[in-house]
Image (cartoon, rainbow, N blue to C red; front, side, top):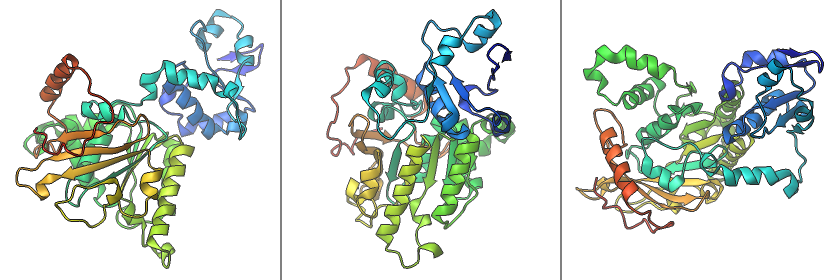
Length: 393
C-alpha cells in the first residue's frame, strides 16, 4: 500500500519477522530510507537488527512502537497521520561509543521481557531450561564428550527441539553424511521406530520437510574459509539463527594451514566463529573433541582440546559425560560447566532410546516430571554438580 501524502510505500513481509526472503531484496534497492516497524517484543527487535544488516544499516531506521500505537496498516486504512511516529524513527547504525541514553530502552527491555531475553526454551529437555534458561542468539556454545559417547546423537535432538519451534537452523556435519544424519533426525522427530512403521514415512517426512532446517553439503576435512562463506550466505538468505558445526577438528590440518601450529590454528577458528555469532546475532554450537584422557576420568572444562581460548570465548560449555565407559551400571549425563548468562551450573541425566534414537525422556515421563517440579521448591543456583553422576533414570 502507498501513502501518497508522504510518498511512502508500506510493505508487509510474506513470512512476518521470521525471514526476509531473498527475492524481496531487489524490490527494496531503490529506496534511500527503509523504516522497520515491527512489534514491541524481543523477537521483533532481533528481527529488525537482522534485516537491517541485509538491507544496509546505513539506510535503515527502526520504530519501537508503544502499546497505544496501532499497526502501520491500521494507520493507512483509517487515513490517520503517522508522521509523528515515523519522524521518531531511530537509525540502526550506531557509533562506536554509546551512552546509557542510547541503550536505555534496551536495558528496560531486558528487564521487562526476561523470559524472551533468556531465549527459546527446549520442550524435550526441561532440565536444560533450568540450567541454561534457553537458546539465545549471538552466543557461542562449546560441546565436548568422549569418542563414541553420542555427541552427534544428542546435539541432533538438541538442535531439532529448537528448530521445531521455528528457529532457522543450519547443520554442518563433517563426520556423518547428511543422509544418515537426516535418518537419525527423522527418527527423533517422529519418536517412533521408523523401520517398523514405514507405512507412515510420508506423513512424518512431509511434516519434517516443513521445518526451517538446512544442511551444508560438506563431508570430511574442509577449509575454514569454505565453511564461514557458506554460513554467511545462509545467514543472509535464510536468516539462520542457529548453526551447528560438528566438529572443529575437521577444519584443522588443511592445505592452507600447513606449517601453522595446531593450537594457534584452533584459536583462529574459535575467534572466527565467535565473531560470526556476534556479527550475525546467531547462536553457534561448536563440537570439539576432548584431550586424550583415561576413560575413568570425569571430563572437566580443561579437557577440551587445544588452548584455553575455546572455553574462554564460549558463552556456554557443555560436556557429555559417559560413565558407562568406566562402570557397568554407569549412566550418561550432560554437564553444564560454564554459563555466562546467569552462572547456573549442574547436570541433566540422559536416557538413550535405541528405537527412536532420542536422549530425551519419553513424553509421558516429561509430563509427569513437570507436574512434580511444580510441587517442589527450586534448588539454589550454582550447585556443585560434579558429585552427581550416579543419578538414576
